[in-house]
Image 1 (cartoon, rainbow, N blue to C red):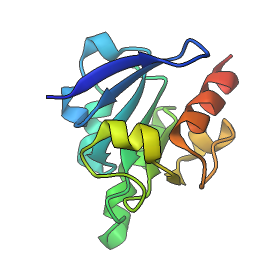
Image 2 (image 1 turned 60 degrees about the vertical axis):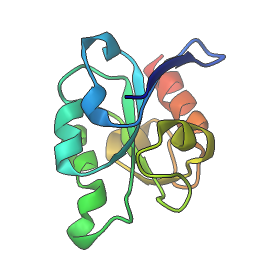
Image 3 (image 1 turned 30 degrees about the vertical axis):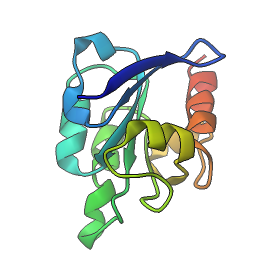
Length: 133
């Protein structure tokens, strides 16, 4: 199991986890960077705690946008959620997602924070943090 807590220069708590299934109460308030796909089943894990935001892998997006369908579910409860392109970061590898991931999809909450397709994950986290005040 790989789960690592880092703090950015802006004192933002970021938790890197290879699978969103590792989420627990200790992650409350954190911005979670996951290696998991962004489907509905992954979003349900993320709903288990209050998060500042969450990143998934788009897993190639797939049929009926299944690889990013969870972003809409998180939007319904006000959580900024986004996915990185599967071509930019390895699926199941949160460190690679943090270091190399390029945002490929965002929900409306993340977009309202200024997150845009093409951003790095660290830039997206800073956008969400600045919007949160």
